[in-house]
Every structure is written in C-alpha cells, then in structure tokens.
Amino acid sequence: MGRDVLVRGDRLADASSLPPGLVPKRFDCGGGTVEPGRINAHTHLYSGLAPLGMPQPLSPPQNFLQILKQIWWRLDRALDGESLRAAARYYVAQALRFGTTFLVDHHESPDMIAGSLDILADACEELGVRALLAYGATERNGGLRESSAGLQECRRFIQTNRRKGVQGLFGLHASFTVSDSTLENAGQLCRELAVPMHVHVAEDVADLEDAQQRGYSDPLDRLLKWGVLPTGSILAHGVHLDRDAVRRCNDLGLWLVQNPRSNAGNRVGYPRALSHSRFVAIGTDGYPASMPDEEAALLELARKETEHEDPRSVSVRATAGYALVTSHLRLPFGDLLPGSAADLVVRSASGSILHVMCQGQWVVQNGELLTANFAEIEQDAKVQAQRLWSKMSVL
Image (cartoon, rainbow, N blue to C red; front, side):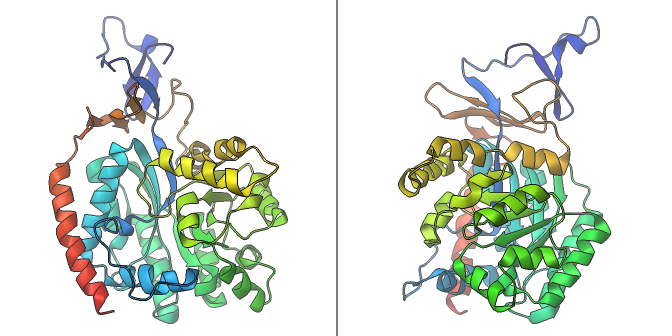
C-alpha cells in the first residue's frame, strides 16, 4: 500500500494519526497484492439460483423478447420469500469470495413486491456487502397497479431502510414495459425524494422500436421527457443508443453500465457508442459477480467488434464503477489512500482471492466466507432452486 494505514469505522486512515502509545493491529497479507474491492454496477440477485440447474425452454428462444418471456419473466413470477432469500444469499456469498464488495441490484418479483427489497437488504447486511437496491417497476403483468406497487416498494425502502452500507434507488424495468402514466409517477417520486433511477435502456432494438412507435426518438428521449432520469441515474446496457444519445447521457451525468457476458448471451449486440461518455461502468446483469471474467468478456467482444478502437481503452473506461458508487454513497474510493472506503482484497501471486475486507470488517479469510457458513448457504440454494424450477414449470 506504500505506507501503513488503519481501519477506522469503514474507512482507511493514516496510521500516523493514532494517539501516542496505541499500536495498530497488523494483518499479514502473506506477500499478496492489496487492491480495492470490485464493484458490480448492474446485477440481479434474484437470478442467483439460475446456475443450479435452471431448465431451458422446450423451444429455444429466437430473439431477446422470447428469452425474456420464456425464461426470465417466468423465473421472476415464480419467486417467493424463501427462494428469493436463498438466491440473494448465494449470489452475495459468491460475490464476496470473488472479491466483489459492492453490488448495484435491479430486482423484480411480480407476485411478491411488498417487502422484497428488505429480503435482499437483509442478505446483504448479514453477509457484509455494500449495495444499492431498486425494484424495477413494470406493467407487463398487472398494468398500472403493478407498476405503482413497484414504485411504492422503492419509496418505502428508501424512506425506512437504516442498514449500514445499503441504500435504495427508484427502479423501472424498461421503457417498453411501462406507460406514460407510470413514467409520470416515477418522475414525480424521483423529484420528491431527490433519488436517482435505475432502469434498462436500449438493451435490445425492441426497446428502441417501442419508443419510436410512441413518438420518441429513442427510450432515452422518452425517459428524459418525463423527468425520470435525475443526475446520477443508472442506465443498464445502452447497446442501441447512438453516439449523440450517449453524449447526452454524459452531459447529464447519467451512468451507462456495460454488461458484456449478458449482451453476448442474449445476442443483443455490442454497445459501440459507449466510448463517448465518461460515465461508464461494468456490470454482470445477473451473471456471477466475478468482475475479472466480465472484463475478459469485454476485451474479447471489443477485439471482435471494434476495428479502430483500442479494446483496452474500452475496458478501462468500463471499470469506472468507483466513481459511480462515490456519487451515490459519498464514499471516497481511490488507490487505497487514507480516507478511502475500507473495502480491500488481498490477491495471491497466482491471482486467487485470499482475503476480503468490506466496510472495515474481514468477510473472507484464506478463501473462506466468515460471515456465514457457505456450505449451508449453498445447500439451501440447491433445495430452493428445485422448488423454483417446479413452480416455473407450470407458469
């Protein structure tokens, strides 16, 4: 780290600031390298059980909307309290073992909206990860009543949550699944509480076409005209935004989050225009929160898709999540300088994660989760996954 630092609360401080005679506790990092905890700037904790044998549709989806309808919109409708808690705990536990100490989550469980953000927040607090949480309001199942319930869940959580290191945002699923009435309501709430929005934007061409059919140039134009995107709002994907739209996001201080593995898996395209913004971070869109794997996928996509741009410059720009978190939580992230958030990762010479500190507390040591029994979390996840697949099969 260059000089001795100590942990005070959830921040790093200069060891020279200790009172005379007080000796700081030292932790032997065993010759490993110390780096900041990683940030996943857009994910879905509710998908945490998906790697545990989620069945595929009998008829393979042919496009993005079919993927949503046949897989993910069936999964989120099948969620209940037990399966959601298991999914969140399993996802968070794995994230910490990957060295990811901050999660920006976008949640949906249409048959269990009220209280769902508390289930996620409890899992984050229990295991010791920092998080921004939002419910993605939509009309796709129950019309205006459903979208209103989603926005009110965000409002309730924002106003009542007191958990350390966890905060709430407003959320919308995407422009193409809500009416102007929902957008008007969402804009009013954002202004009333002075809280930003987290929403999928132009992930697929279907979102672009829907906005144009409604008389807007693109979904960004529609969301802005209804006042839904205060400064600091998080726009996931942005694949089909052109350079002018991306520059507009930059000028307004809106964050765009690139999700390479998901974009490749859903075959939605490569977001070429994101290089025109300073406010770009990287997320996993529900894939496991191994950020090195996400960056490797980004580099490979950039190598294939860009002819005149250095793919490594894209990668650097897309890992600027520290500034995103700073803008929301007012935590000074940096190169482990005194005053930075005490979210640290110790990595061995071979690249494996040895130790993880989050909010000034060790949460992983020698590769093992300290805040809960990982084997028990994994076993519960497997049991709940089978329940979830059974419920999905009849939807």
